[in-house]
Amino acid sequence: MQFVKDQRITDSHHKRSAFIYVRQSSSKQVKQNTESQKFQLSLRERAISLGWSMPVVIDDDLGISAAGYAERPGFQKLLTQITMKQVGIIFCVDASRLSRNSKDWAQLFELWCWAPLLRQPPRNTRYEPDDAPPGSVTDISG
Image (cartoon, rainbow, N blue to C red; front, top):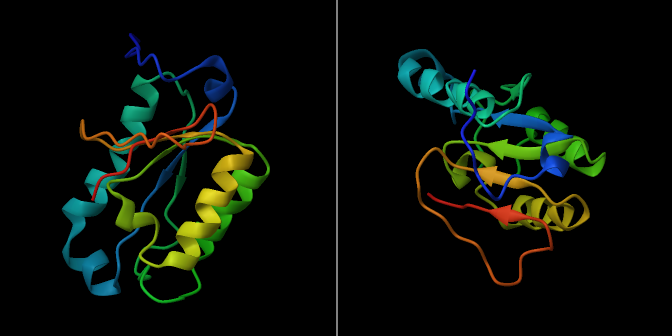
């Protein structure tokens, strides 16, 4: 298989796992909007094309909103893996899949400083803040 080259991805990122975070906000969306779920799951192929052989899919939060302070076991699992420095890159459709509240964003960005990682959206939209932690690349869209 031919891998896509991305100069931002280093050996240190590849030594860690790629994580695909999949979430839809309600059980109705999970049942009726299957295309969204298929699209989110297709990010696994993107991870493979960038050199990760066994991306980890976290879909525990299907049907759980990221608004407010709902208990989201998948998001907590992702935070745990970041803390354990197991995450090299996070794939998700857009930033709202990860969180829609400040508390979760603050927690995620704090952990980003501990374990520099990449977040890669499927689009070419890029946002790289000047004050990002060394070794991290944040591509936030949505």
